[in-house]
Image (cartoon, rainbow, N blue to C red):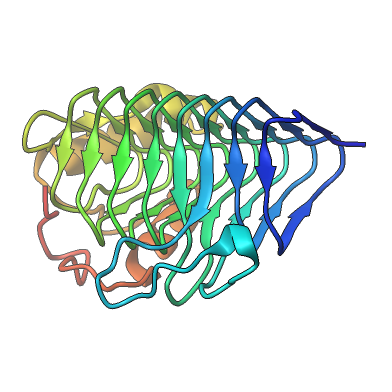
Length: 240
């Protein structure tokens, strides 16, 4: 059984999983799918139209469903005053076991992986893609169509204008590559030898020529994800 506050607005086309909590004055508009055990805080707005001048600003609260939806995976927490927009050609997706802290903004068509933390005030432009287990610091801003690789960490206040590779640390304005997320790598079960190898490669702004098995899945995602990135091969420098 879900617990929806009487002052919340749940529109047509919204599918709630089991044990979903939705707080006072929250608005969830369809089409949207909210996974089991999600917690949506007071004043959140999920499912408003994409911010594109070419897209209709429909009245989803009256059953006028015109866009591609929002999907939120199970056990994700969306804290107060956060907003997630509808997708324009695919559902805007937030994965399972994520934490979106207060005032987070996820724009249209963005894809956020599993186990991601978006700290307070984080803003994602349209079409942003974030891999699993990424941590984005407070008030960071990610430019539209940028890609943040699995296990990366973006420092608070960072302005991400170029793609961030897997297990990297990036911070500053504009954000720059500053070594590896050693803590994240260790928590993912990687040994010190793999941490040292990636740290040495990133010091030269390169991808390791021979990827260890522990890193292969993350870099396969990084190379294959759409939209295509300027990084084309292990011989090319990283874009940060």
